[in-house]
Length: 298
Length: 282
Image 1 (cartoon, rainbow over the protein chains, first blue to last red):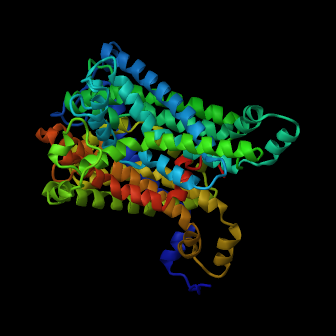
Image 2 (image 1 turned 30 degrees about the horizontal axis):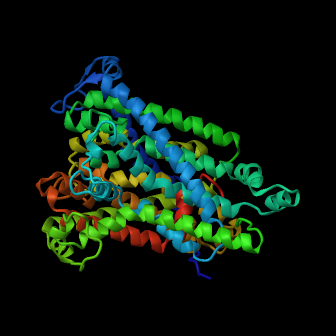
Image 3 (image 1 turned 60 degrees about the horizontal axis):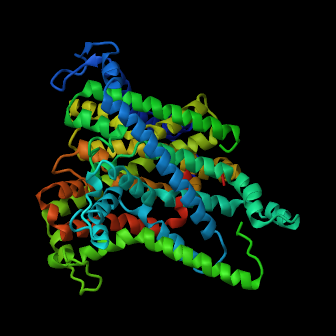
């Protein structure tokens, strides 16, 4: 046991009295300064016309003009649909495939650790590197995929194939995320209900549908929530593979906001787009949190 | 709970089927990485051979070339500095806060905690736009400190959430007896609580490291040529005139991703806890 100094210095007494304040304050300040203030500033910015050469608060107040501009911009409104469609399709595939793999890995057989380790590799890879790997595989003239099928399809340059390629890479990259969460869930479930079901004569499909799946629901909801949030903000793969093209068919909201802000340098419009995106993800979040709370999983 | 498997002959057939399915899945999931690893070990002529080469004598020339490139080495050092600083800062600030959240009821605790959760959910690009402007005005843009601050704020909610769970699981008697023995609040935290929460610290540091090491977006906007990190250099490599240098591109890709993969595998068992980050208890 450690021997403590019984006589306190005044510094120690101060920290004892204000322990909570001194421990929470740094986190709080950090979040307010680096996270909160910029958000408030961009909220202000989204109601002004502002250029990079002006002082921070010199923008002219323009009311809802920026929002009006963004919402009537065909590229932006299309980006909303593309983002939602991409998110839904990617998350659905990740959930189904992830659940399937988790169920397989949960069978008690020798060597399962090796399979699990191998299957989570795509998730460990630096996303931008993973996307570049796929870009080489899908390369029109030297990519191995085209070499195999003997054609020269420009997978990432055709409006009808690019979004599917992006989808495929998203599924490849993060299915393991779902697998790991659901596998942890499966491992933590009690065995008694399943045994009871099998004694009562339930077959394995029934046992899965009626016992395992309902018990797994909190884990499924968490995986669903996290994947939806992360796919909604998808950026790296799209930046590396298509940059939003061809013909804006892979232009998701993150990509649009990035291009408007850091390529066209229109910070006011960018701030409006960013805030709209923020509101949308807030709505998604609150919805999911309410559902999870109702299931008493949180 | 492990799945229940039926009687002997059916069981063998089933095991075989499960192994077969898993093998196919592993091949599908690993193929892109293995193929690119293969490309990185080929000469220029072998890379562009048609039909593709499946057997060749591996060369490490691409790796040697990349490792002697001064821009690669500089980006590597930048990444190392930035991600270790971000991990240290996130844990240094976040762990004590998590302990306070776990052990001391205070006014506004649940609201603050919920605010942290919400912040984790916000899309990074939405924060990046104004962050860039403000950093630019105060002269922080293009410095390594700017990305360290950005990564730290994105890691903090994760650290606090994750560590709070670990601290809550520790028995209250531990710190109480330390206080009775004369320990200060900080003393008890540093010498009694923190060592016991080491698995949590490991998990949190891996997740922070991954976040910082792998990030592209913040580094792309907030750094310049001298301070950029590896993922940004990779993307530029791709877009630049060396677009046909597949050997160099693939070799540097492997080098970028290797450290973070090794790190994650070493601590694999801590990872799951971090992924769901306290959203599920257990």
